[in-house]
Length: 438
Image 1 (tube, rainbow, N blue to C red):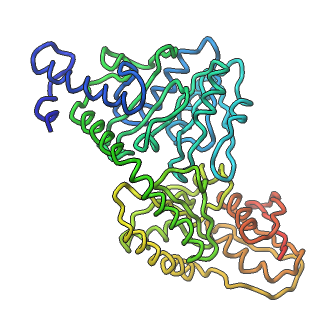
Image 2: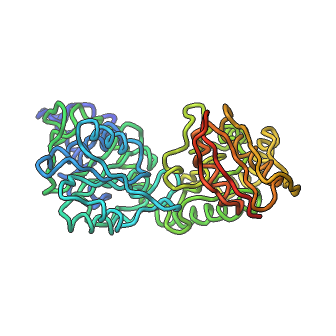
């Protein structure tokens, strides 16, 4: 509240009002540094977390241009990091995208294998924003440090729960992720890291984030970070119990569900699962009508016809995907009601889509399913309807031109105990071959 009254002036000016604004800004910077675990003069406030990422990546690459233009990222990074990687490639650089396992985690050895003499920068999120998996940042930072390569950590999802460990070189975060106001980001550049800010610069924020600082928003962002940190240890225990209840109960209440993400190494308040034979957008609308605001990484959304890059990289089911985020203070009764509502919502969507009942008949040794022009989850539903019509060892050939089928059909096979044979080119779309095993 004080910053609204006294933080309106230009902190770069020497008059009394400017000095008051500067004191507020300096106090916020020191508090942010304490929360991150760095020096105050290493902290820069940016207009957003995305701007922090872009400034961090481009500045670090430019600062080490004599070393090379090779960038390492994980395949499940936030889109802001991946967009910066795309720009690096467009400007003549090279990018290695490190693969992840089915839990969504990288391995330090994979980063070690990706390092090259011309590697200028490596990036790794502290935790994934879609599935909650926590990454081995400290181990990867050690590998990079040994090779003399700086590591940029996107800590947007985890900073509200605690500082990021390890010998990292740069760090970014976004205030709205921990409950602060939107429009405030953090960029931390450790002393000794070669960094050259790109684009027009001015005297503000060490030349790394030009423009007049929004002091009331910055003060509110840091105050909120301190507030959530004060409750983080206790709240983490409570939210982990609630998310574990969801992870355990959803497969018991709803058939044909895959819970994704690491079961142990994950953020306290995120749980993600995917439901076979469900349109993700339709399910989100059903849950929204019941009072639950959840998200989806499914391909079945109005904005895109391709699966989430995170789910695709993990090789898990994308259709009917639901991401539940439990903010601090979430009531146990809300989780209980969500578990009551979910089975009916899924069943309703499946009924509208004509989801299959178990089939036992056996006939021709090979069947063709023409799903051309049909979008997720229809190709998988049609596959499931006919798999029982071929004998054990028989083949179902699914024709599809939906990008999600390349991920969802193999995922369905793994969930249902069938064999995914592979894909073949077709006159239109792609033919996906599935052999009946059970």
